[in-house]
Length: 169
Image (cartoon, rainbow, N blue to C red; front, side, top):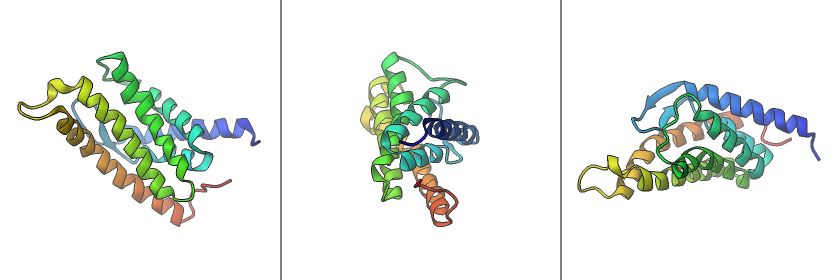
């Protein structure tokens, strides 16, 4: 079994780096969600390197840290969906160690699903007249997460191809 201190250190570094990258805002939406400097990459890397359990744990921690400056909370279940569950879903990337780009896509789709459900249930009051809440939630959350997905794929691809990061011990 790998040294627990080393694994914990990697989790801490990944969460800290994700938080710093999250502070570099490219665009912020009014009810939450933003385009950042590929802030999900450190958590995705953690999941790909250490597996989905560690990745989910690191994502949950990041989700809790992410809400600290100015959380947008309207209900306790919405808090769970938009913070620990959404970011924990990034850990699903760890199920695809042999295909890291697919892992990135799966992790971010997992995050999207969590935000999508939250949007339908808790943010229907923002839906324009005549539009279904599911359509609005898909457009709203898809608008920034698609850009984040593209950025994350590009960054992860470059980091892997240039052998800048190691996915395997």
